[in-house]
Length: 190
Image 1 (cartoon, rainbow, N blue to C red):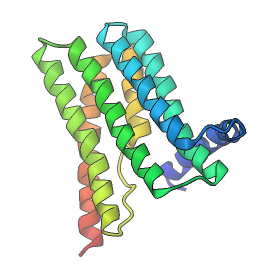
Image 2: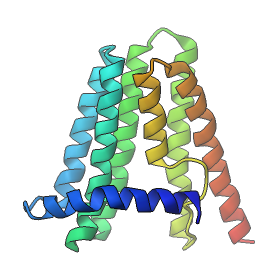
Image 3: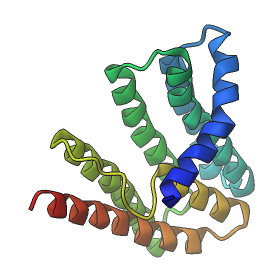
C-alpha cells in the first residue's frame, strides 16, 4: 500500500466521526472552508507577532480544521464541483497567509525572506501542476509532499523553534514535488 493511501485512510479515520457530528449541526462544508481561511488569518497574525510556538499549534489546529470540510462534504453527500474549487482556492490563500505571517516576522532578513518566497512558489506549483494535470484528465497525486505534509513541517518548525531548517526542507520538498508531478504528467502524455 502506497504511503499516500496510508495517510488518506488514517485521515479518514480521524475526520469521519467529527464530520458526521458536524453534519448533524447543519453547518455546510463551504462555511467550514471559509471558517478555515479566517482561522489561518489568525494563525498568520500570531506568527507575524513573533509568537512562533503558539503559531505552530495554531497552524496544526487550522490544518486539522482544513481536513474537515472535504470530510463533511463526503459524509453528508454535499460534494459539489464549486465546493471543491472553493476549498482548493482558499487552501492556497491559507497557505499564502501563513508564509506572509512568516515574511512579516522575518522582514529585513534576506535569507529567510528568499526561503519563504521559494517555499511559497513551490507550494503553489505543487497545486498548479496537479490542477493542470487534472484538466488534462490525468490523475496527479504523486510526489513527496501534499498540503498536509507541508503544514506539518511548518508547524513542527514553529513549535520546536527550528524555522530555518523547516524552511529549507519546505523549499526543497515542495519544489521537488512540483517537478515530480511535472515528470509524471510528461510520462503519462508520451
